[in-house]
Structure formats: structure tokens, C-alpha cells
Image (tube, rainbow over all chains, first blue to last red; front, side):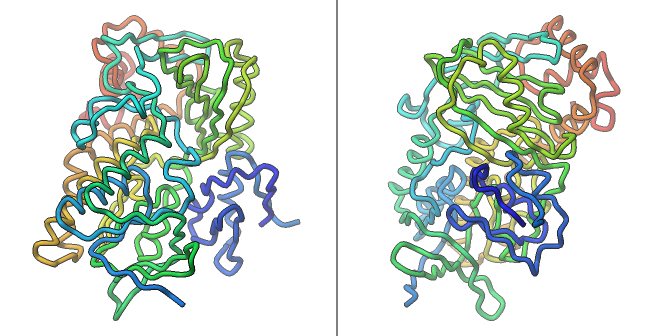
Amino acid sequence: MKVNYNRCLHCGGCVGSCPQNAIYLNDYILEFDNDLCNGCGRCIKLCPVAALSKEA
Amino acid sequence: MVTRYDCDVVVVGAGPGGSMAARYAAEGGMKVILLEKKAEIGAPLRCAEGVAKKWLAEVGITPDPKWIRADMKGAIIRSPSGYTFQLDESKAGSEVGYVLERHLFDKHLAELAAKAGAKIMMRVGVYGVIRENGKLVGVKAHTMDGDIEVYAKCVVAADGYESQVGRWAGMDTNVKMSDICSCIQYRMVNLDIANDYCEFIIGGDAPGGYIWVFPKGDGIANVGIGVMGTKCKHGADAKYYLDKYIAKTPGLAKGEIVEVVGGFVSTCPGLDETVDDNIILVGDAARVIDPITGGGICHACRTGMYAGKVLADCFKTGDFSKKALKPYDKMWRDRMEDKLYRNFMAKEKLATLDDETIDELIKLIMDSDIKEVNVYNLLKVIKEKFPKVVEGFEELI
């Protein structure tokens, strides 16, 4: 997962929305557990500032 | 080196729900430790700061001008075509009341917890739970002075929307995609707005949600939006919709933004399970939020208070099993579940209406003689003229 930190507001919304519990917010850095992530894309769709995208 | 702490209750999160739980458990004679991840209680803001007035007394909070920024005279609901329904103080009912300073309000509630005897630890990031022989016995956390383990007879998960503590403890805190609202809010200054009225803008400008303008006096306001990801065309880019609305709205367009906050709101009527052996979920972590307004402060305070009281009862017997904690679940459901479910159903229906129908609804309400305006009374009027809108939950109105 790619995070655009120019847009991210560190609100933690993606953390609470992830059905796999694969996202952690460590202070101002988002960490994704690639073993748990199943690529559902919910975090991308829900981010209020469109800061997330799939890794190119 | 891991430092060990022992207590009766460890509360994770010093928002309103956590502080209330800590306060009432401590008042019940328990040794309470309240953990806060952030460097400041009540900040950064993740809230529109509007609350009703009535419930404060119910949970033992005395209104104080120190944390009340503005006293509302009423509310304005604006439809997509600009029909407005204005409610004045005598009619404003219970949905709108004060606009708070959350960074002061939250600290006040933490202070009440501290006065009751709770120990507060700041900048403590909980990252997991501790189990011994399968039994939940505490939480693990990073602090400024190294890692700690806090052992307790019961854990209160008050970690807000993220609701991770419950998940680590094996509970299902998941929310359906359609029950999540993505929000962004600006603190704006130099606005030309009604300083005594909270404004709500519904319809296509905020797909599946609404835009709010909550004034804080002197042309300052929280201007925010919540949208349903499933209703937005290109994902829930709430910022896109909010910027668009501000640009086309004369009283807002010339304002300047001095703060930007993001946040999520769950819009389901609460989790099916809010207790398990040695753990209680409160507030946003339990998904107890008004599904239609997205208001959660009063729900967090109520659930927090109930949790603290039930914990104090369990303290007498030493039994913190799921069964022993169940009265907490019953208390909040008896007090709020019908209303949460009704508003959840209303939200589901309203989200399906097109702008023309919403215009019609606002016109209908404008012409009605509602004495006290709240979601219940609005739905009653809608039920008479648009029975289809309330199909499936008529019996709750």
C-alpha cells in the first residue's frame, strides 16, 4: 500500500476500518501488514483525503 | 526492561468514554489506571464539537463556561435546492445545544477521573493484550520511558473508532463498509455565518451524509462533512466534496482555514457483543454512536459511566466474567438501543433518497408544526406524508 503523506491527516480511520486488522498507526506513520492484507481496497475507498493507493 | 503495573481496571483511551469509566470505577473504590496514547488529552481534535444539553446531568457533568465555546439558539437544516428549515431555541429540542472546546472538555473529564482517584499515564501506546492461561489479564504498551505491562482484573477498551483493543482480545469490532462515514473538518475563520445556529446541509452535496457548520463565535466555525464511501462516485474523498461546497457558498468561500482534521464515524446501531471475559468496550470502540447525526460524545459518556458502575459492582464479588459484566450491556441497550436502531433505519432510508425527494421533505417539515425538533419528531411528520421513507421501522416511530 502506498501512502501519500502530503495528504494523510493521521486520523487513523483506515486502521479502524480494516476488516483484516492489517493497518497500524505508529505516531505519524501508517504500517501495513502485508501478510494480513487481502487487498480488499476498503481503506483506499474510505480515506477522506484520498491519501492511499495500491503500490504501482 | 519491562516495567510492571498492577491495578483493578486498566482503561485504554482518555476520551470521554474512557475518562467516565475511569471516574466511576475509581469512585467505586477500584484502583484504576487510565492510559492515553497521545501527548495531549482532547487533541488533535476529531470532532464537530456539537452536543445536546439534556444528557450532561444524567452522567454527572456540570456545564462549565470553561469548556463551552458557544450556546446555540437553534439549528438550520438546508436542502439541496436551498430550502431552509430554521428551528429556534424554544423549538430546537434536544439535538443541538452547546458547541464545546473538546480539548478543554476532555481534560475536564480526565480531571474528574483523577479527582476520583484514577492514575493517568500519558503518551502510552497500547500495542497488545496480555493473556495468562487463556485469561485476559492486562495490556502491553510503549511509553516514553520504555515498555510497560499493566495487569488488571478488567480492561476497558475506550480506544475510539480504531477499536483495536477489542480485536486483540478476540472480539469482533468490524463495521460494514456501508456503515462507515468518512469525515473531514476545517476550523474556519473570517466567515459570514449565523453565530448562534448550527447548520446542517443534506443531500447530494454530501452523498450519504451531511455537511455541518457549527459556529464558535466571531465568525469562527467547524465546517465539516461526512460521506458514505459506498455512495460516492470516486471513493469517499470527503475533502473533494467539502471544498466544492465551501467554494460555492458565499458565507464560507471567503473564510480561511486554520485547522484540518480527519476522522471516521461508524453508523451502525452498536456492536452485538460489547463485553467478554475481563473486557468492556465503551463509546466509539463499541460502535455506540447515533447513526444519523454521528454524535458520539453523549453515548461515550453514558456507556463509560455504565461501565464504571458495573465494574464497581463486580469489584465487590471479584467476578469479572462475561456473565458478570453483562449488566453493562443491558444498561446501555435499555437506555439507547431502540433509538439507535430507529436512527440507523432512518439513515439507511434517507441515504437512498434523491435530492428532489429531500427538497420535498424539507418543505414538508417547514410547513409542519413541530414543537420540539429532534429526529423522532421529524420522522413522525415524514411518516404521515411519506410513509415509504419509514417502511420497515414504523413501529419505532
